[in-house]
Length: 380
RNA sequence: GGGAGAAUGUCCCGAGCGGCAAAGGGGGCGGACUGUAAAUCCGCUGGCUAGGCCUUCGUAGGUUCGAGUCCUACUUCUCCCA
Image (cartoon, rainbow, N blue to C red; front, side, top):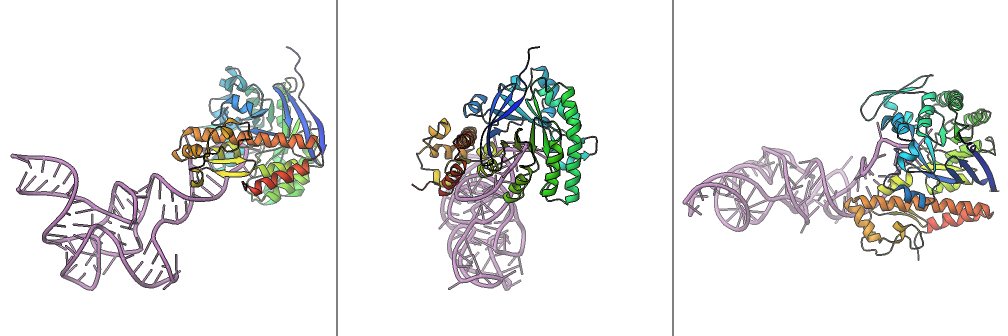
């Protein structure tokens, strides 16, 4: 076996608490702060992988829960792994299924050992343990893997939040053992522990501290952006930021809007993922440097201008707003495709702007300018 | 020429068979979407001096306390027989 480069992270620059870094995985370099488009089922919905790559994305997500049900982890492995299966040859990060344990709460049965749930597809019963989750992520060939965690639904009693957080810590240890038993480190893969603790600062701190004592390649902050006010989310990041190791990447799971991202980068977060750009795109909403545009609105009907002539995304540059409005209104698949592309491209250009600004030591100014532009809209 | 049936809320389809400002859809207008059971979901869609009044169900009459609903005539459309 050829020597594989070990998983690594290094900080290239900091500006205030904002961090500019680089993660190296078996499938390339991930420039941070990074936004990772969500590709639950091995596809970033409504986009070609080549186009995703061209927007500047270094990594996409895959999902343990969904892929274990269809087409099945063993099948993907037999077909050469998720990279080959999906034609995405850059880094893949996989979720552990922990989030689905919450979002599919009606179907679940949870105990110390793991979670038993019924498939949303055919009702069949499945068990997901920390070990099986890691096994599946290994079968998929994931470069950055997540421990199985329990994401408690908010609002919840702090007793319940603590129970879920403690369980997640125990599962973190089991996940780590399995990850090492499967040779993850030798393959250059990484495993992240997940900070839980809901909206309770003291629990977040405990979770971050105990997790930091375990040898993970990175640390995720989970269980946020699930309905709580942004201020609460940011407060939780503030609590966790000084506790987590400086020399490891921090990944804020499931976040978020452009504003959430820029505020979280300001608090030391390195990685993000969110369905926002892809789902919103399918639903007719464009994210741009001058804010949101809802293409269901009649005001675009006669507008011959492109969404953003300065963009290097063809969807934003080469198609008229009137045409995109027409596609969205008529329910044409191309409308969803173009807007998804616009959004993924905008998110990536935002991240590029953030990275450049941190390197230049002007992140705060960049943040202020960017937010002002969103607020200003298109007043020209 | 004879017979049968239908016209509904000022965009369309359409329920309604004596208490109706009138079900549902579509369309339209707007909103939401945060580790994707989501090309999904949620509002609004007659007027006003606004929880009360006004004007609406092809047209004109009639019956009734009360008519979109029953009766008569007319108009238009559809189908069947010649």
